[in-house]
Amino acid sequence: MPELPEVAGLTSFLGGRLRGAVLEKLQVLSVAVLKTADPPYTALVGRTVTGVQRFGKFISIDAEGLHLVFHLARAGWVRYTESPSAAPLRPGKGPIAARIGFAGPDGQHVGIDLTEAGTKKSLAVYVVRDPRDVPGIAGLGPDPLDPAFGPGQFAEILASHSQQIKGVLRSQGVMAGIGNAYSDEILHAAKISPFALASSLDQDSVRILYDAIHSVLGAAVQEAAGKAPGDLKDTKRGAMRVHGRTGLPCPVCGDTVREVSFADTALQYCPTCQTKGKILADRRTSRFLK
Ligand SMILES: [Zn+2]
Image (cartoon, rainbow, N blue to C red; front, side, top):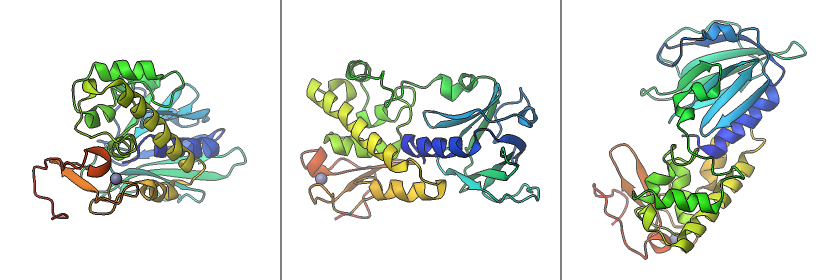
């Protein structure tokens, strides 16, 4: 799933290419994708793109008072092309959820496809007058990279949450933009167990965690900046130290990266770096480790 750094990369990439272009056509291939009915999505046609913004993991293409907002969910992505096909799309089982065509200031045509792999479809598109009309955006917590988000505010947030820190970090209502991958990476960088309770972290740990959020996300945002959508996934994968690396050596200490799996997700961590060597309970026996 694209998280804050990849969504930031996509946002700046799209902003650089679409600002000043006129939205020519918008095809939504499945009714389930479009979450709003008023204003109608056809109202976007003929409007000029004035900017592209990020809200947590949402992207908003702003077009003269209307906003085309989308959330890529778990398996969604953006495909950008400078030679869009003129043929209309047929609804079917393909990965394309929506196709948007633009005409640039010099008359050249560009297009983006919102795609979603897999059978579970949760990519969402909204057409709104204000991005905050999207419930998922209205409910977002502060953006961790917002300069106004200071260590004091972070400490207050943690003090008021008694849940495990892993879940708190990735809760969009607590902080916007961090998901499963970067929460694993942030906790590894901070040497904190994913099962530690947020409200019980001491002052030093809270400060270390605050700094880790900034170093991990900051580095990833920098890596993602200027990259084409097609390169962002590999960039992300290549930067991971524990996430998605079950059974491989921790690049910091050499211990084996372990996994805790849940019904539909899994987390990874390094016992030596994060849990004083303790193996966290997993509800199923790991296939990877003896
Ligand atoms: Zn380690």
